[in-house]
Image (cartoon, rainbow, N blue to C red; front, side, top):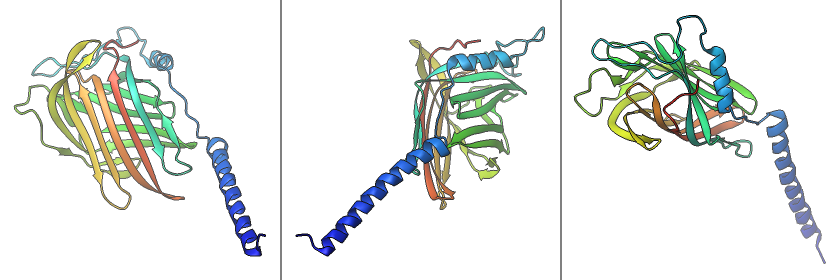
Length: 280
């Protein structure tokens, strides 16, 4: 016969089980309905339509090449258009039952005219993109000190403008004497917060695109922040001599202070160019 104590323990166990179920159901409702944790792929066709809508149409303009050169040797930036990339990647947080967004198998980078060169926009999702800018100077092809990121997670839109104290030389107009450069630390703000990336030009190597070996310059950006709310980022780019991104790899982990306490965000991806010919 069950004792009063055993019946009390059983009621507590059932109450705990029911609470767990209700909490799980509540998390699903909060994620899907309240916080709107839904993502959408930006298809290649949509990226192409957007590029065509934004391309200049005045007489004499071009959307095929950036007509800039250096004084020491001819350097041109990539042809404008939409480039397709085979993609493996995802992002996740450890709050709200560990939400995760898996990136589609194909994503795009759109090259458009901007200022002294080109703007690159990588669209992982309609809710996730990054922006960078490349220009040609007397030194070579340089990453510009402005850019940005756009992110929607759980219905919360976040626009982060990037501003750094200087540009970074990625592909020198003259071949360097050594295979790698000294690390170049920058002082930046992203979304108004201090940010301190370090860029370094590494080895020359090759990557294969459509069965052809392409000479590339390997450059790497790292962020190492070891304070209470840490941030660790390693971003590798493999660029051809025109600044076309042939491949990229990212590993990122940050711990952020939020209203629900510390939340860890992780993102990884790898990109591989499918074709050197852009869609226009």
